[in-house]
Amino acid sequence: MNGHSLFTCHSTQEGAFLRTTSALRRLAFGAVFLTTLAACSSASDAPAAFEDLTDTTEGRASATKVVGYFPTWQGDVNAIQYDKLTHINYAFVLPTAQGGLTGLSSGDTRLRSLVQTAHGRGVKVLIAVGGWMDGNDAPFEQMAANASTRTTFINNVVAFVDQAGLDGVDIDWEWPEPGTSAQNFGALMRELGTALHARGKLLTAAVVALNTDGIPSSAFSDVDYLNIMAYDWGYPHSTYDLAVQSLNYWIGRGLPKDKAVLGVPFYGRSQSGAYTYAQLVAMDAQAPYKDQVSDIYYNGIATIQAKTRLAVQQGGGIMIWEISQDTANTTSLLLAISQAIGGSGGNQAPSASLTSPTNGASFSAGSTITLTANASDTDGSIARVEFFAGTTKLGEDTSAPYSLAWSNVAAGTYALTVRATDNSGASTTSAAISISVTGSGGSCAGVPAWSSTQIYVNGDKATYNGKLWRAKWWTQNEIPGAAEWGPWELLGNC
Image 1 (cartoon, helix red, strand yellow):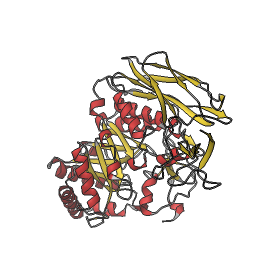
Image 2 (cartoon, helix red, strand yellow; image 1 turned 90 degrees about the vertical axis):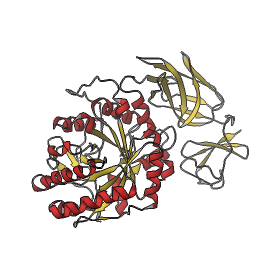
Image 3 (cartoon, one colour; image 1 turned 30 degrees about the vertical axis):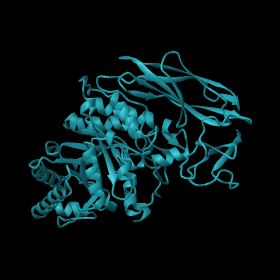
Image 4 (cartoon, helix red, strand yellow; image 1 turned 135 degrees about the vertical axis):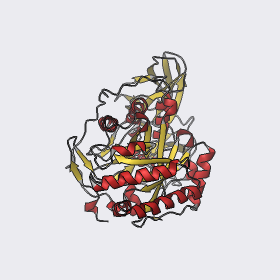
């Protein structure tokens, strides 16, 4: 696939969009992101009022769908956070013009393992059909245009679902155009929906964020819900404002709220490439607490949680492209989504802020730094306030005023945050502040010894040969101090 064909900007009344879905889907086909996106318009990142879509119904959080796409080409089935998902879309199997399916067998070992594990945790699994397909939707177009090949396709899909023990199908046709193509899409969804629903199976579809006449409103009654891809839209590509506009657009067209599932990206994009969220966190310890690293735009914890609350209150749930791009610790975006859902509906999430030290403050190595925080909850009480330096938990306080004495701090630069959790389990993470600690000294107390099997990322500390070390980037099995330009920074003697 030629690099110049990866992105195409299309002007609309709302701005510009990229005629793709998730940028990283194309990694399945070996694509590289080389096209400059500067010509695409950007959207405001400030949260906007969601007018005329108010919903005060309590209990929506318990019915919220959390849909995670999981690709065939990467990710560990055993590493999925099943307890934070309701549905998994295994992506992709590909359609043929004759109505066949290619690229994946219903007996695939990895698929069978995914279905068995997910079902054991109460999570539904759907097969996603289509995707980017290297920008070629001709197989969909040709198959859907003919009643005979539509029937063949539907029979093959139903057989695949039955043989693999799946719960349904997600159609990802990118994109049906207005007119004949839209009519064929409508016919396909109607006939496929009839076949699947008769067997108690789900039918969903992935759709563009805004301004598409290729998806007829007649299909709304045929699907169980739509996955709205509110990303890859201008530059930066996935703002909060775009999320608001997307829900407004689809619900305004008549899509029931409980069928409007808002999509969020677990990746970032610059003008020259794409990066998984996990890569961004490895590059910058403060990445979880902002939306931009260098020229790479993405959604950090605060934006993901704001979008999740919007989706719970005004839609039917949240969708993720894609879950293997997440981290597996306290910086996890899926964890942030779960926490936000816990604070939506009847229970409101608490507020949290770090009040001391101030942003940019400097200290001498070996000092004791007092951290203080404010936390409140409008409809309950604060259960605990946890203090973090990067991803490392320093401690917690369970009663106001919330504070922590951080002793014998080693030299380095730290991103400090607090996380408040209320009595119902909802959590909020504060904005990060940065401090610098200079000089020699600093205690090794509580810092684990370096291990050759441990994975370390930027900011992680370890002791080795009586010295305190800090990782500068992702590393494993590289001895601290073994190489002059290695991944470890010496902070001082223990």
